[in-house]
Amino acid sequence: MTSSEPGFRSGFACFVGRPNAGKSTLTNAIVVSKIAIASSKPQTTRHAIRGIVHRSDAQLVLIDTPGLHKPRTLLGERLNDLVRTTWSEVDVVGVCLPSNERIGPGDTYLVSEIGELTNKPTLVAIATKSDLVSPTRMAEHLMAISALEQKLGISWAHIIPVSATHDDQVDLLADTLVSLLPEGPALYPDGDITDEPEETLVAELIREAALEGVRDELPHSITVTIEEMGLREGRPVDKPLLDIYASMVVERDSQKGIMIGHRGTRLREIGAAARHQIEALLGTPVFLDLRVKVLKEWQRDPKHLNRLGF
Image (cartoon, rainbow, N blue to C red; front, side, top):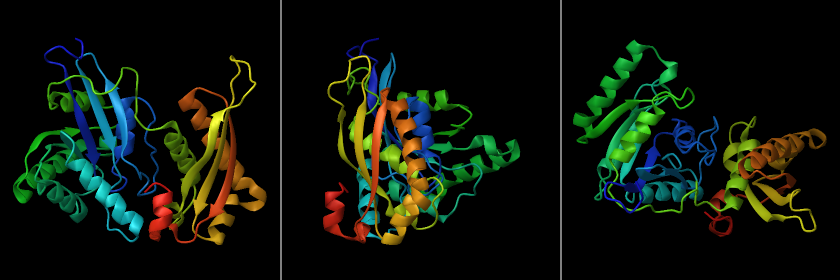
């Protein structure tokens, strides 16, 4: 089937859920490529990242959004605005409700917020992390998800248990999302897996490496800027080298010390981990020059946020 034939479907879906509900892992599993960073830290995602799934019968564009949360900074407020805008622009919203956790006030709030949109998307409930629970617990969880329909005045088009890490029912979920898209031509050229600029993906991979092993407030305080990125001149065609000059931006001098580590050990570890991921994504050897700089209270300063692209 070509994208101009009747029956071909195309459109947008996004996953929503509380922080750490498995949204980014699921996006990567369906796109079958790492376009969204996944970390055990809440609030890892800061951009609406689009992943494109090409099929013979459809083109599904998955948007990975930040988790909706109580904002404590101007950055938090801007991320929440981004989430709500995305919801009203997609065809289908997949609500991620982790099977290993009870449905709480955060989930209820989130679903009721979507239910109040004037331009309502089709809703699919996804019981994520299905590999972590027993069949009995799963049955309870699915009953609780069903009960939200009456409680919140919404209706689920489907309820699907999924494990992205065990690749269980991921294909079924993708088929279901596609079945709910409108008929129409492909929206992106064949072969594109994301419309994110490479610089953004590279910055996100560096930030993911930086988030490993840091605690408490620090994850929120780290952002990454790419100062310069390009192939090194004068190299043979079959031996390219990509030069990347990047800065990790933190809010305080004490945080800079943590990121550099004793005699630079932490900075070297982050650089090595990030370089490995970037080379895997872009398929090119990389030279990464990584520095740390301080921008005081950048999450609360409109000028800093604008300059950093938020």
